[in-house]
Image 1: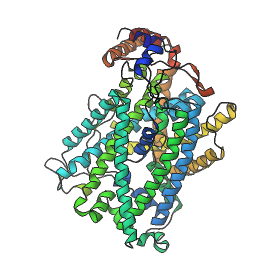
Image 2: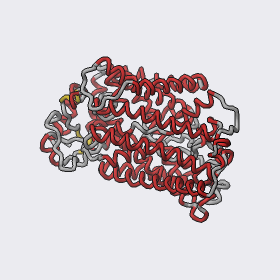
Image 3: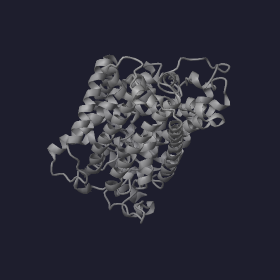
Image 4: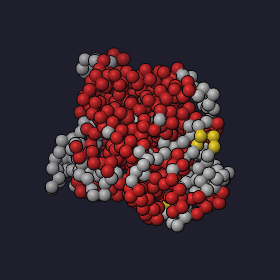
Length: 571
């Protein structure tokens, strides 16, 4: 372990015939390192599993209500799928040109500098991942417990407890083994695809029976409200958010087996598959429900199942639960790698850049990820239950998801949840930063063009035409302009939240002459964390990765890291 911690620039880890690394060999030749255990199937599972959450089962009506007709809604789903594929192409080139975990955070930091990268990380740490994981976990617990309380809402304490168990169980799986985590992702991704395949097959059966009134051209574009350019733009924005997660595989590039081949292949397989599923699932829904019924339903797949499955309608709630369980796993897996990458670049505490000496998993980053997920007060949907149970008051529900939690923070919560005290609804905060999250997609794709101009001779295993990033940026600008026009206050608050990271960056990262007492305190915390988690700094390759940017650890030049490496020998 001492050698593993000290020889950070040693030889690259040896691999077996299947491409996955041997931890024992890692320790003997170059130190402890992240293992390459994500093959092509698991890579597709990460992309598909993170894109397809509970939304397509629960409430795909956001696009329909803004598109104003079934036909235009289907066009929106197709176009946004194509735009997502174009964005994924751009990320594929960046992913093999800058083969570092961390995704768009790493690309923005390397191309535009540390401050830009830190702001991307700041938004993710502050709100996006903590609230996203909490909401998905609460959705899971709601659908698991609902069959036990058919006439009323499940107890809120039970919802929170089951959500916490879900988070802790999956955190343990991710801490124990990368292979276990990817197997869980593969299994539950397959489960949700089978459930959606059932919906699509039932839709085809409905069409064969002649139930395609709303798919006929004469009726498909029959609007239930006046067409409006602003609303159509919002429909595209809703569709784009529904495809969110398409870039998550770039967060784990360093753990991919043969990333130069499997990263683009996984993208080329997964994005068309998701687009097909989204379009045909929506077609299936309108074969059994009118647009008015679909808009009135708070759980579309459940209503669909009740109409067509009869006594087997319980399959749909179970499918939503399986989908959300896999969604929590995928979010934990990828977000921990983002925080790991941020710590390695010096933008988060250095403890988060360490991995377990035997399991080779980023345990501190995973614990940080789950501890920052607030398990708030759940608001079950009225569609799923009748009346409140005992002390569970009936609460107003959110329009787009199965539940909306209030914020009741536990004492163990990290600083990243403090800002949530400013609002009683986490969805409000997600809306604020959702604009910023999408903003950074465009900044990252723009960085691809900047990199082409600044370093035209850089080795690029994949090199796409610049026409594609230009098309993506035009669509992206269209959405952002209409977002700013339609919701100036929400977008402005999102920008303000992002800019709160500027003083944090200069105080925490840029200012390197901190008081000695502060450095000593941080060193002691880091040392204690190392002993508790049995982790060390991973070995890294200080070489040109595929002729591209230098793969190095920026922290390796800092004095604090030398102290940490020395201390790791005592763990």
